[in-house]
Length: 197
Image (spheres, rainbow, N blue to C red):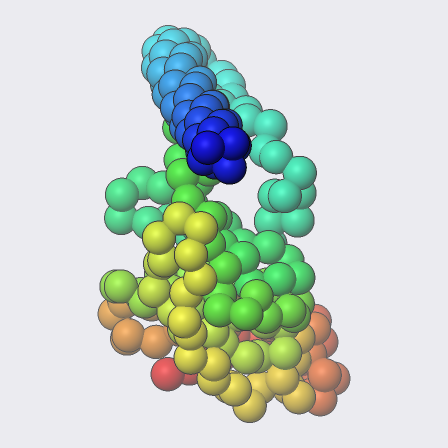
């Protein structure tokens, strides 16, 4: 009987703890909703002020969490949100620019490391570019998950160090911007652009 009583006491403790975790999760979600509503109101107020002003004024300024202090690239999604990525690890963030709230976080499978310099969206596919010309192709993953990816070598890493990438819908190609030319020193003062895929 004593063993049964101890088991019931342990079970009751686990249920109480898990209930507290759920309540804490619900409290965090409610707090996040409040922040979003407050920030959306502030943005609407600033939009009104900007419309009536003859000079440019900032519409929004959000302090991002420490995990985003090394944002290296941005890409606009069709839903108006922005994809951003970490500079050194294959982690992706979806941010609501109206509120500054991170709506989604996910990593590429295995969290590959590198010097990530740009991100772009091409339909359902997302491309992440490393400075050495390697491209990672993946789809947006659910919050907290990992995204499987394909990795492609553009073979351009010996030509230059890349700084950004964008998708050109007219040609269905990726446009890569060169930051530093390695081989052809005659181009060191020029803007060098490559198209791939």
